[in-house]
Image (cartoon, rainbow, N blue to C red; front, top):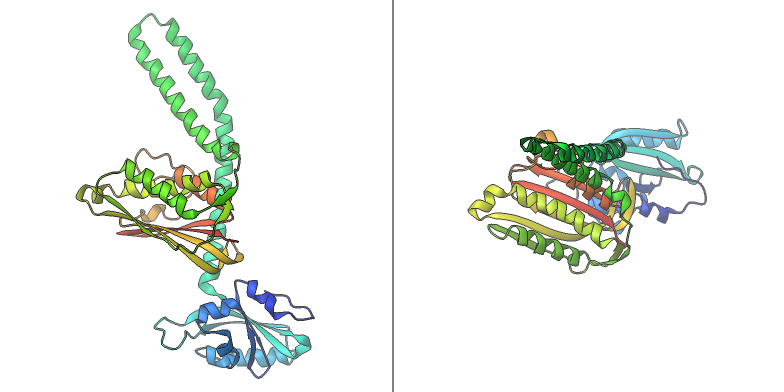
Length: 358
């Protein structure tokens, strides 16, 4: 909930992710923030000419709460309501949690609206990121513990191989050495993000995407098309180019591999789409402008039992997969203040990357 102290500065509310309106006790609107404009799809001037009751499907409970807060029966009123969509919209009313508070010594009232779905999504994101963070830390600790014994096992197998008289048994020592090397490579990949220095420079996201596109098409030259849908007006931003290439490459390679049945008949497609998103919330923080990068494919979709865990380390939907590609991608994007989300159903999977822009 918002705390307000005098002197009252309504423009500060434009930086908030929640919808905020300043109202007179009779319901007339004197200010709405940018989030309110974006959700209702109406300009600020139009909203400020109306009354708050017109925005709701049923405003009776809100009127009662307004009157009670205005008469100081209690400091803050809370209720759930349904916000009308703009005229001509076919969308259903928006369920919101409404908070009513006095400001300006009771001369005006502050109405804050939190989308119930938005709140649930933010809670889900926070919970998932916390789980991923704890899991990654646990696995990295295990990786450190495994690293030294692996070297000992490999060395012992090499010494044993040198002393073996029966050359037929060398096959078994080779298996030990090979598996120790495989596990060593896995441990190195788990620890890699913390070893590599962060190299910051100006980045053009479309140069990153063109690099990824050329790499993936070289690996999968037949039956796959990668469609560009770029917003050329996007500004450059500072970041680690190699990290972002690797993050996008991991997602795009996964998509190309999942498209194997469609590649065999020649209709596999991946779309790389960029857009500018305004007034975006990333990890509970509000940004005025953000890059929104979509990586969309027409593959079979992510299995339902994996959708909530695909960014966890060692979770893979593919036989032989390390389960680290998406974990590293999320890690690299988070280092740029961003987030990766996934939506998937049969015939369509969408990975959405959001990164704040200057």
